[in-house]
Length: 270
Image (tube, rainbow, N blue to C red; front, top):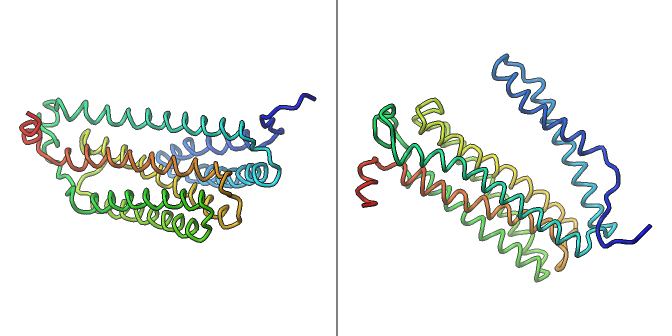
């Protein structure tokens, strides 16, 4: 067998079982909404969580103990994470397109104004501004963790990454409280639908990012990362910075600019 610097993965049941669990989630969600039957949704969530755990466990073993993640493999993983983040940018671009398409030229159905007539928006300098500060601070702490790992400062890396996870959880709690007090719903014209779709999917990405960083925190505690080999943490940090940047665009466009009356915004632009 010809030797190669790339990792030729062994046969694994996790991709097939993982796709099954992921498929059960949207189908189960539809059954839950239409028939109030949560069983398939819970099964999909449970199966996906279990598969994610054992799959990540195998990858951690291949990287840390078996030495399969050579420099060529690490480069490929970095390209893969970059392309994944690019696909996520395109995903959110669609939401911003829908929002600005409706807000820059509001139709008569929404009162020819933005926000639409009858919609009371959130105050941009209250909880949304606090959320922005929390995410920006988490971006600083995850950068601190990155530099601490590269410098071999174990305690500082643990502390800063733990702080990042706490800030991410705090952001989710603030977002949940904001949703409970929002004076409009997803059914309130195009403003409500674009608001909850864009911010809701961002919250979902924050949950994924917190989970990713928590896994990295556990691996860091177990000494899986070194100065020259921490591509798993690097992927999580890149993803977290992407979440930060998306929130800045959401805050400026939806919370701050979108809270203005359309006539006032138009006057400011002109």
